[in-house]
Length: 212
Picture 1 (cartoon, rainbow, N blue to C red):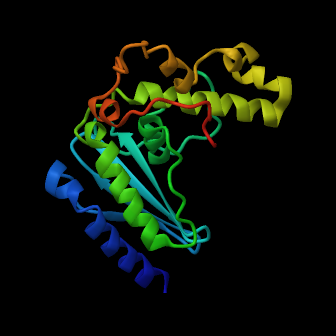
Picture 2: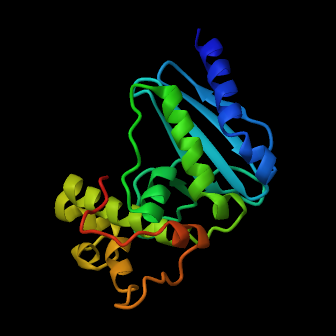
């Protein structure tokens, strides 16, 4: 039963994410993992990987974008993140939030609708990454590292410092939302040093922070 479901879902993904092949020259879709809780489908371009994780319990499709290794391997899933962890794969939801300053729409309990929304988000916000431009990863790294620092202190307390975290890191204005405030002048809303696609979709931020 799982194999049939996996094949059907793979076909749906190939249809909704067809632009990866048509517009960016990505290769074949492959089912890299499947069990009763999760199905993972991979598709690779020349430099970029897209990993689609179908959470069958939550009925939500998580999409991750990555910089492939020289032998075109997708980065392994990370364990405990420290300040020195090299991150080459990011959640599409973080890219959507960074570029739009809007919370990604939740489509839990409807996997097929979720797949369509994620495909739309990837097409709209992922052009640079899909083309092999990973400059946005520097900003996504800040989001993930600050979230990891907060999680470490919540889990380990002051022992988080043994992993390299410091409370000063949390107090720094490393949140891209805060950094962005300094890039707006009174007469212009020009966004500097941001990828073209994000700059085009950028809205003046409010005080709301990242939800995760």
